[in-house]
Length: 112
Image 1 (cartoon, helix red, strand yellow):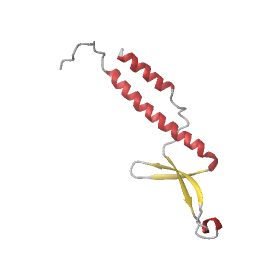
Image 2 (spheres, rainbow, N blue to C red):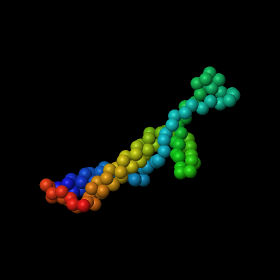
Image 3 (tube, rainbow, N blue to C red):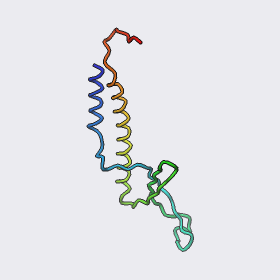
């Protein structure tokens, strides 16, 4: 019975996986940049709001990409798809761990 529940739960997770082509790993940051001179907005201390996708790599490498305003919603969705996929993979792995062990009959203890 426990195995059947685990299989159903696993299938439900699989059915809810996001489209795998629309994935991004990283974080979307909102920053304010200020020009050194010649910009009235920056001279007033307001600056310009920009969105930056930052991605960390093993070994301490980091990449930052500017994201156009019209693509911010898309980038957020792709980041969310990645997070949801990663969480689903972890949950599927836990269910598969359960499925590795044979079902025990109730009332019987396992002998070592």
